[in-house]
Length: 371
Image (cartoon, rainbow, N blue to C red; front, side, top):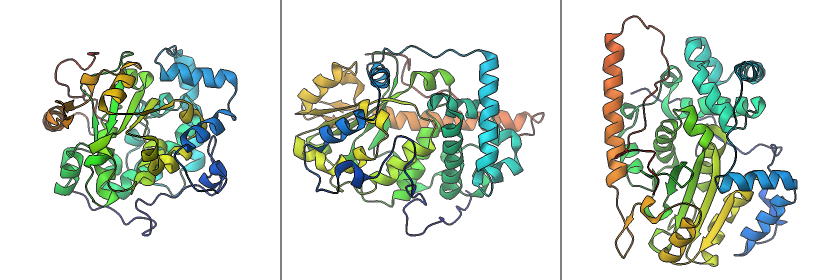
């Protein structure tokens, strides 16, 4: 296991700081809520504030993504090559002294992998500038969380220590074995099962899981739907600790196309802990976020109206207890695939260059199944 490099800012959980100047579609929390105390109704206030900065056509486009009815983007080979060239130009402008440059100097084939570059382009609506900025952050996080050696290879289960694995398998962040009605992956978050650990440990597990969730361009183009479930026993007993760091990591460092987000809460007053994170969302993502209040039955019924069946959640019985069968199986099958891939690489001496793996996502049954 490689030795991680020291974080650039020891006072920060993950070496990430919010930009001094708001990036496109972002503004400071103070500006969002006018410096006043956050109250339970601020979800609607923040959402409306975000909608003011978008045109009608932009709002319509984001709503189509939320409901899974947006048209797939199909590009010709010449257009794709032009986008990749533009991405390379943006990377040349930004890479000086970065972890990406270090990776490129050691293995240009790995850092400049076409599939990885296309993943970031598709996840960011083919915007070369935004994609380059996120790709730079992707390698920055990778270096800080897993060390210099990780810059020229994929992260595997062998890179996780015992605490990382325990944190990952708690189930506070996991995938559903099923997809929504539109065939999109479901990423589930249950803050109530988080235990108090260093945010670095949580980020290492999430990096491993997220980096292994975007392996096919088809999945990236379909996008991911996030369900943030904070109902009754799954309310966040850590009072939102680490949410900002995790949100910065997910939104600004991973090739993840979030086409919709659902926040499920027991009551309007439970929402106060997450208003700050919601206010930091780009305007477009606020429009694609729905907030549901009520009991387990009520929230799951509302999710079903958006094509997310109750069976897609790992909650069983009348008490909605968590069932980690699939999530544990996902991890074990993933490790087996990695070992098989490593064995094949050892037998194949004709490919000296390191490359990104193209493993399939483990699934209990057919991962395209839709409940």
